[in-house]
Structures are given as C-alpha cells and as structure tokens.
Image 1 (cartoon, rainbow, N blue to C red):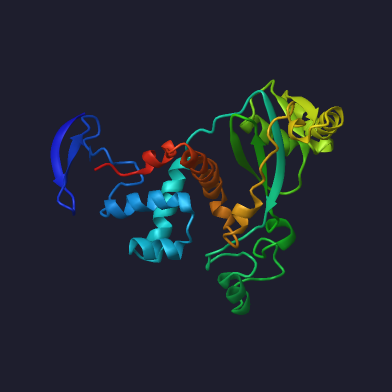
Image 2: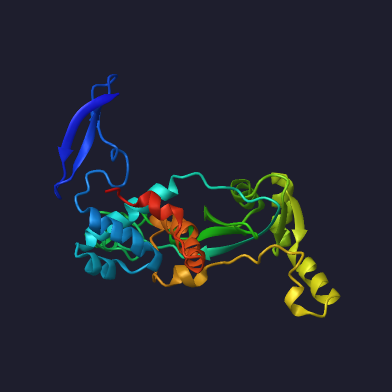
Length: 285
C-alpha cells in the first residue's frame, strides 16, 4: 500500500487516496464503510445521532431535508454495519425467554407475500397459478411469526432471531449457544422446552418460577426477593410494536438497533455519555 494523492469532496475538504500494490486498485479510509461515497456528511452524522430517538422515516427525512428513500437507505446501511459485528455472549446466571414478532412484508411491492401489491395483481392477471404450491404463498407456513429469544443478566442484554416455525428444544438450544457461554446457569420459565435445550447445549437449567417462589416465600421484604435471580428478561414488546409492523427481512437490523443503541443510549444519558456504537457510525471530518 502506498499513498496515491487525494480527492476533493463536495464540501471542499480533501481525503487521502491509497494504491494497493497487489491489485492496483485505489481506495481511501472510507472504502468499505457505510459512509463510502456519501456527500452529505453533516446530514449523515445528524442521522446517526437521531437513531437514539428512533424517529419515523418521514420525520427523519423532514429533519435532515433528504428524500424518504435516502433516509431509509442511510438508516439500514448504518444498522447493517452493527448487525455484522460479533455478538458478545453472556455468562454466569442468565435469565432467558422468547416472544414473537408478526410476519410482515412492510414496504414491499413486488413479492409473493400475503396482502402485497405484487401477489394480488399477479394472481389477478393470471401470472401465478394458485394451485401450484411453489408459486402460492403458504400463509400458515411461510407467514408464521418470527421467534425472538432474549437473554439478560446484570451485565448485559442480547436478542437473537430464531427464525419462523414452532418453538422446539433444538431451536432454543441453537439460540442459547449463540447468546450464552457454555456452563452458565440458565433461568427460564418455560421448563418443558428449556430444560431439554439446556441439556442439549451443555447449560445448567434453573427453574425461574421455583426460584422466584422460594425467594418470595422466604423473605417478607418484597423489594429483595429478586436477590438470587438474574434480571427478569425485558421482552421489548412496546418498542417493536410502535413501528406498526417491521419487515421480516430487516428484523435483524431492528434487533441491533434496540440492543446496541436504544438501550445503551438510555443508560448513557444517565451517565452523561453516548454509546460507543454511535462513534463507530459517525463520519469523520
């Protein structure tokens, strides 16, 4: 690698360019980042800061004075970078659970999903054969809700998408291996599925209902009966519900948005700081 001059941005600033001696291609420090080829640095940095307020796309586009498609593309370009980062696993005593997010193809027009513009018109125009299972959207199979597993203790919080389908011990064991370190104590309220999942994944299963009842009955002070339990998992129903439907294809982006920005920003505001993930997304001057 060697220096290869510089180029001028639209705002007048200059950025160094480098030459790869192996392939002969030029690049800069912005190559391969979400800010590559962006011209509106000030608007991008303001968009990154607005992620802590989780505004709607229309309000964000109006605030930044950009088009709706640009606001959508910028948001998911930033969240895609966070989604590619490795997720730290929790250890020790971890409380786990799962909840469901409704299937959605929000924003899609050309698709085979239920209620979409493309599926209805293709069927009406005869481009789809409703008798063929390879062309027909199977509502009960393909339109099932996504399963989100939550793992939380006093040190961290993580979410993972387990996909669509039935809740099985095998599916939960795969989620535990992704969120929790082996040998940790897993507290769960669904004994029927999690006990088998912990046995398959090499975790110590603890019945959260029994532990909670024992602590409540042994102490008269209700403020301390959580002492021997990890944090009760936060299912985040309200945060996901406020968007009035999340496209299933972008569900992973909303998961990292909530885990890495929203929850950390709420704690950082109490300590007069900001999440380090925001600094990772900001475009340097």
